[in-house]
Image (tube, rainbow, N blue to C red):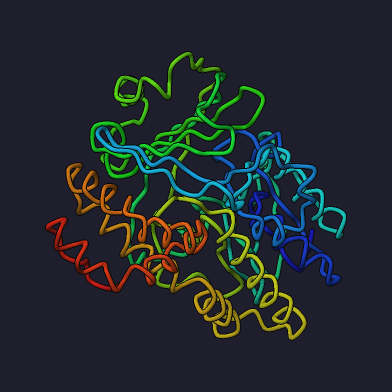
Length: 393
């Protein structure tokens, strides 16, 4: 079979790219390796309204709860942020993925479930993609591959790409039952003893359901820290019943390039993930938008060369690259602080002026905007904490 475009991975980024390419009249194949869309679940599902707008999914079909603020917790301090302005929504992530894939199909993309790409071969300006479905193999030919195949992208390995920086976190998610402190507030837990190198979280879904998660960066499985998390914060976890566990990887990396002859990487596969939070839906959708635009233009001109597709990287880096690079600076700053320094930082940010600044400019999609506003006082804060600023990327 011959296609104009083959999109590998029917997560949000892959489905968005397939939707736009197919809607412009190109024969598009969308591959999803799992038998059920959106499963297994690997995401907390906390996103902004701008993310839903970019996805083109009707919020009434996927929003489970609305979030207005957060409690930031360490073993010895707590900081309450927000409270009146809508900050984020909690999605039914399985339904969200299903709606994204449905949109791609309605635009004309062909969807194959339980199918993965297992090999690639270039031939006469095309790519032969070897696919495997339920033990059977076949080959499809395409002019363009859009690889949205996740944190462990087979396509990126095949291309032999080198990362500018590289880090893979281990994540654990838990569907739970219980009563949160507030259905309108998330809880964030920081500390080397409970989530080394990252943090833990508690996200209310409404109706007595809560998503709990931990991610770690020290090579140990996050499940090993679950009991310590509950012991350190007994008030928040009192009466909580764990129902279902799921795990996944959070890629913290940025490739030297995310394109090659006939190929573009998007989403987690491209490292379009916020280093501060591990969130990838918004950044992946931005990447998918630029990949689709460049891909459509390249297909119309019948020029899918490396030079032609390099425009993709130029566009998405101009859009979100600065935020990702600044996020890597903020992540290194976070990693450089001890638990005692984190405690002091929360105490400093509790001051009325700084709290107002955080509430006014805090944005989970663009955390560097707040950092820019804090920059005038940041040197003073870092002197109080006894740390120096990490180098710029």
